[in-house]
Amino acid sequence: MAGILLPHCGALLGRNISWRLEEARRRQRGDGSRCWRRRRFGCCCVFHLPSLATTLKESFQSPECRRLVGTFVPVALAVAVSHKLGIGFEGDILVSIFRSSIQLVGLGYALKFIFEGEKIYMCSFAILFMILVSGHTAGKRSKELPKSRMVATLSLAVGAAGTLALMLLLRVYEFKARYIVPTAGYVIGNSMSIVGTTLERLRHDIYVHQGQIELALALGATPAQAVHPYIRRAILQGMGPIVDSLKTVGLVSMPGSMTGMLMGGSSPLEAVQMQIQVLYMLLGASALSCLFACSLGWRVLFSKNFQLQFDDTRVLS
Picture 1 (tube, helix red, strand yellow):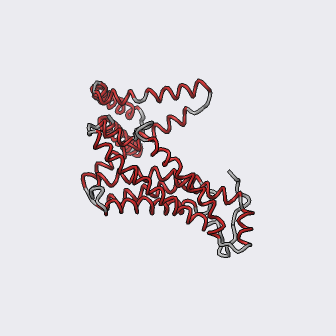
Picture 2 (cartoon, one colour):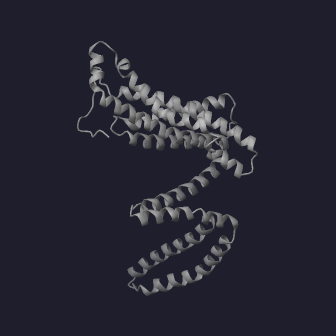
C-alpha cells in the first residue's frame, strides 16, 4: 500500500516545491501575487486527486489491504480503552504505531536491498547498526551505572556476534544474508532486554550492599570475590525469563518466527526445526552477553584502588 501511495505523494510534494521556487523568482521580479500559486496548487490537486482516489479504491479492494486495515482495529480498541478510562495514553499509542509502521516499511526496503545484493559488507553494517541501537537502549535502562551504554554495547557485540559466528562456522546456517540478518536481529533484539535487566539488577544490588562489599574488601577479599554473589543474582534474573519461556514453548506459546513461517506456507516440521535453532542460539547468546555484561559492569563500579565509586546524588530506582 505504501508503494502505491508514495509515488502520488511524491509527485504532489515535488510540484509544490517547484511552485515555491518559481514563486520566489516571481517575487524577485516584482510579481508577488499569491493567487497564482493557489491557482497552480489547486489545479495540480484537482489533477492528481482523481488518480489518487482511483488508486486508493483499487488498493482497498485487494485482500492484502483489507487484512492490513483489519490489523488497526485492535489499535482503535486500545485507544478507546485509554480514552474511556482517562489514562491519557492515546498519544503514545498513536506515535508508537506511526513510528513502527515507518520503521517496518523502511526495514522492508532495506532488507530487499541487502538480500538482492548478497554483499557481506552490507550484512556487517546491518548487524553493527542493530548492535549500536540495542546497546544504547539497554544502557539507558541502567543509566545510573557508569559507562552503561558502552558496557551494554560490548556485551551484545560479544554475545550476539560470537554466537552467530559460531553457528556459521558449524554450518548451522547458510552463509547468506537471508539467514544471517534476520537471525541476528532476533537474537540481538531479545538479548537487549536481558542485558538491560542484568545490568540494572547488578547495579542495584551492589549499591544496596555497599557495606557488606566494603567489609569483604577490608577482610582481604578481591573485588571479584566481594561482588560474586550479586553477579550470580543478576545473571539469574536476566536469564530467568528466557529459561521459563523455553520450558513452555510449544505448550503455552508459539514463537513469532515459527508463526510467520507457518503463515508463509512452510511445513510445520521445517518451521519447528528453524525455531529450535533460533531459540537455542538465543539462549547461548543471552548467557554470553549476561556474563560479559556483569564482568564489565562490576569493574566500572570500582576505582583503580579497588574502591566503590558511587555518586550519592544519583537516585536509587
